[in-house]
Image 1: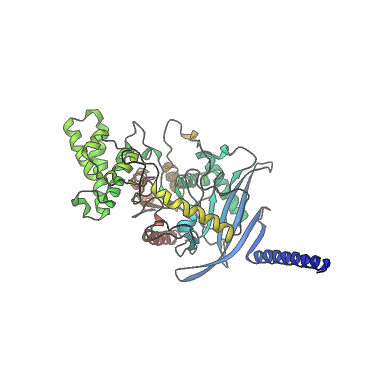
Image 2: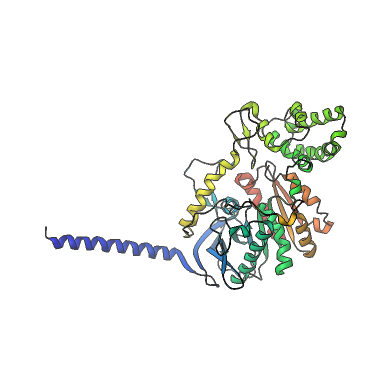
Length: 503
C-alpha cells in the first residue's frame, strides 16, 4: 500500500481520539459545572434528584474548598465540603444543617454515606456488610426533604489540609472549634444563608464539636443556632474516660454491659425474657444506686458487701462473679469485649456490640481488632471515593483521608480536668431560649455508651422549660445506629419530628 495511506490512516485515528476526548469533555460539562464560589474559589456543581416520602426533590450538589485565610489574605488551610441545596426554593428560608463526624480525626463520610446524605452504602438490614466490591443507592431516608446539608471535613480529614502553616495548629479542641466555627461563618456569607434556620449535627466527637460550637458561634460570631443534633454523644469526658481513680464511668458503663449481654443471651433467664428497655431501666437504677455507692466506699466495704455486689454485678453483666471480684468490681470495657463470649471463642465489637470476631487465640485478655469497625471500614471508604468522583465529579491529587493524622490532639483548655462541653451547651441554651437539642443513643454502643450521655444531660441542671427542649431517643443498634435498617427508619422519623418542632 502507498505510504501516504498510512499517514492518512494515522491522522484519521488521531482525529477519532480527539473527537472522543471532546465528546467526553462535553458530556462532563452537561452533568457538572466547574465554576467559582463568590470568593473566587473553584467548586464543582452537579444536578440531581431524589425521591423521599413519595416526593421528588431536585437539588444541586456543590463540592469544593473553603479557603481559610489570615488577615493578610494568605491561605492557611483548605477545608473540603459537600453542600446539598434544594432547587427552586428560597434558600434564605430553608434550614441549613452543618454536619460532621468525630474521631477526632474522622472525615464526614459516615453520616454522609450512612443515613443523612442523598446516597447510602448498601448493607444488609442488620448492618452487616455485603461482599466487595461495595455499592451505594439513593437514600430515601435522607434529611434533604427537611433541610439543606453541608458536610464538613475538618483540617487533615477528607481532602482538607493546612496550607500556610503546620496542620498541628488545627489539632485540638480549641483550634478545631475555631476553624470549624470560622468555616460556618464564612459559608453563611458566601452562600447567602444568614437568614436561614441553622442546625448543627455531629456524631461521636462530632457531638463534642457541635456542643462547643453552639456556645462559640453565639459568643464569637453572634450566630444563634436553632437546633443541635447529637448522634452518639460524648459531652463530658469525665463520664467516658476509664482512668484509675475515676470510678464514674465504671458505674455508667454497667447498662451497656447489660445491653450487650442481653443481645448475646448471656443474662439470667429472668432478665433475658424481658424487653431490653425494661431490663436496662433496672440495670440503670442498680448502677447509680448500690453499685455506685460500693465504688465510692472502696476499701471501706466489708467482704460480705463486696461479695454481694459482685454477685449482682455478674447478674447484670453476664460475667462470672469470680471475674468481677478479681477485677475489684471495676471491669475494664476492653476486658468485657473478650470475656462475654470467651467460651464461644468470640469477641464482641466496641462500636457495635452486636458484631463478633475471632482473635488469634481465646486466652488473650484483650481483643485483636474491633469486628464492628472492620464491618464498615471497607464499604464506606470505597463508596465515598467512588461517589465523589463518579457522581459529584470532584477529584483531587491527594487521597481522601478517612482518618487523618491529628494526634496528639490538644486539650490545653482543660489541663488537669476533663473536657466538659455539656456546660457549653447549657450556656448556649440559657442564652438562646429557642435552641432545641436532639440526643440519639444506640444501646450497643461502647464508644459513647448511652447512659453516659443521658447522665451528662441530667447533670446540666437544666430548668424545666430548658429540659423540655431536649429530646432523647434510643435505638437497638450501636454507635452508627443508622446502619441498622429498622433504626435508620426510626431515626428518620425522629429527625423529621425534630425539624418540624424547631420551626
